[in-house]
Length: 429
Image 1 (cartoon, rainbow, N blue to C red):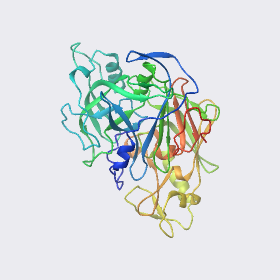
Image 2: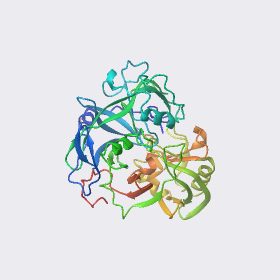
Image 3: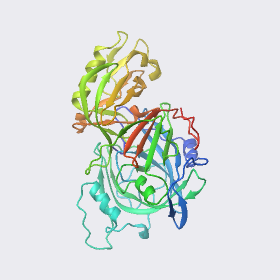
Image 4: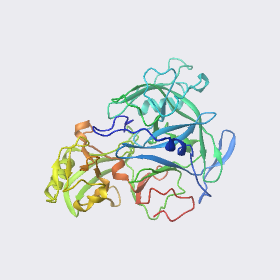
């Protein structure tokens, strides 16, 4: 959804600790794969489609994002990327030279002229189409320029380049496919603070998405998933070797020719076992959003239900962190202290077979540094989302969420996200 360098008011973006920087250098881990796939060639080396898993860092609060370390270039250098299933383009802040860049954890990526992707390249056309921009090339030697805008009014202007990404796969091999990504030399964001990341990892459904390019190069299947831990951290994986297909709740994706995001369509909303008699008309799974956003009508129905069911021990209070907060008799230390005071929400996705997603209180509340419990579901109409509802990181915590583009389905299952699994392990839960 957004670069998220400026989290909601009251959230402070913390600079990653030195130990985190060192730990992030360990890119991937894995043992033997359960299944293989079609063979292909990466950088002249014959490979078989496999899987890769990366550790994640960050949290919903106070950092406001989850990010991954990826090694890019030759020689490979580490960069922190905000994991975003709500957009296609992966990009780094870039010294091309840089016109407007934030302070970032690592030295700016420096491209060379031979790394430029020409305007006539099919990926350039796909990128422009995904951004609803007219694709026109005045010369076969013209570079591929872009401007990408996000829902938080942030933007990045840059040029498409290609360079190698180093991955250690589950089958033990190391591959370095040359992939296209954005070299962002002009960033417009609402905060001048240091960014905790060097750029964005775009994992949408478009051709320019890193996931689609992995598939095109035969590195992994067109499947990606994440497991965001409530305690912070988690893991990201490409390929389907980790997916416990028989135990996952699946719902079909609703495809749109105009939008490359992951949507199962509409959903009915329940508060406990009570139907709120409202529908979320279009739901999007978006790891690029820290919080969840409901369209105006379901948001108001939820707030009314919450206030009507409120314990007498809780009082509404003003908190700069989020719009709707409560305090108890004494400050809360964690969301686990307050979850017994609230009911679970349930989303019923009616696209095809019924698919229920339970949202317990810890998946829609945060406890702030002031000791208050705040609602992490916001009114999407106030940020221009209209009828769109977004399931952000807070709602997807402690669940393995899988985006299976091979079979056109989205799935989820409760999982211990603070433990990175080994390939071939069936004990995910």
